[in-house]
Length: 359
View 1: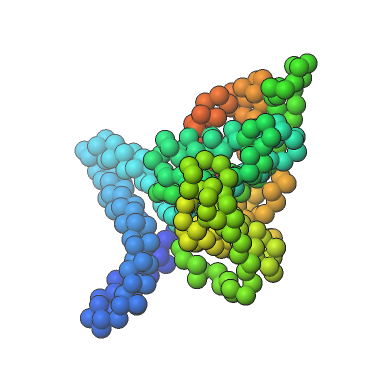
View 2: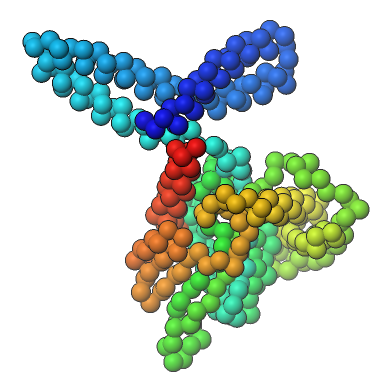
């Protein structure tokens, strides 16, 4: 095991003993806030220390078996035991390293997924619609809930801009690497000469804050307008001013919500989306100042960076960040995104592990 990683594990093991004692003390003193904070830390550390305890038990088995190697009558059996124990120990090392990785506080959050048509005119809007449906289908396969927050349709279909809320277990952890520019190469339906065109759309992944207090928003900084929603929803949606547009005056950020029939619900959803955008903006500003920001981390804020190309004539998808090429574009567009997301996650974890070992 890397000495740096082992040292971190031993420090964490010591801290686990401290937290266990402090928990008992906080419980007897009926200090609820202290007890809650310590319980959260205990839950984070316990899986690591439990795995490390198994690792050290195996090390003890290896040491005992190696002692038996000195006995000629037991040597053959001892060699088998040493070999088997070393294999179990080596299998635990990657798991221990992964457990040591710092958790992303946003991983458990729901998200707002925003897709905007980029260069390419009507074809870009059509592609933005395809990308939105790809994520909706992926969400469906995982049992996540989706809500259409706002949409501006393209002239020939698709979307100029669409915002969708996705809620479920581990949504942000799975989709956080999808932010960036997605480029498409295909023959548009309107192309009579059969020429391949290139267009693009941008995807933003915004973690949904837990509460509106996470980012302070002064009511004086907001302009709130109501209007009649357009699109599906029956007679009611078109006869009342239920849609809400919120403008954050200092930043110029504008958000809309027209999905709910209730103006109150639309306003609450729009404020949550605004908060998510302001939080993302603050995180991007912080990340840009940190020289250690990794190439896969969401938060670089560089949406102009092309992260992926969808080549329909060749049924090829290429993720440029990790040089991943799949000739399964038709599958991916129907929501089979795990084959793209898993390699991205693994590469990101490998980067973190390398930094952890070096530290």
